[in-house]
Amino acid sequence: METTISRLSATEKALDVIFELENKYGALMFYQAGGCCEGTQPQCFEKGGFFPRMNDAMIGTINGHEFWIDRDLFEYWKYSHFTLDVTEGFGPGGFSLETPLGKTFKVHYRLFTPEEYKNLEPVKRSE
Image 1 (cartoon, helix red, strand yellow):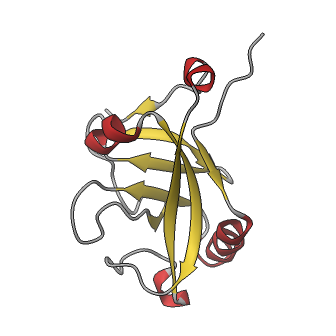
Image 2 (cartoon, rainbow, N blue to C red):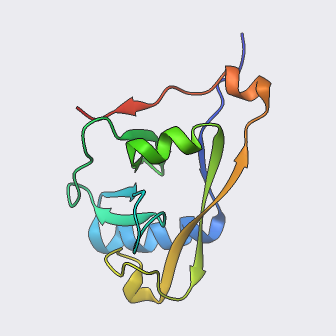
């Protein structure tokens, strides 16, 4: 039996910030839009603080928190693994929960190998 390949992971630095945000806000969610301004930077919200649009894609979870991406962005990046990271500084949007900590989430991408792509975890689509 083939191993299912995850579309999403997180660095230790990102997990540390997520734990800090969990302690303050409880359940979280992530959303990565495809537009300008906050654009393609992942945003972190309290769970239910943002509603994905119809057919947006939930590509996985980080520490149990859903990570959603814009439906059009998913079509562009569906061949890529997402690694959530964090850096010092303020992201362009300023609405994400890590902003007051002087940090911003970012994603590193890498293309799946053909073998990985055949065995990816399925995505969940919003209705």
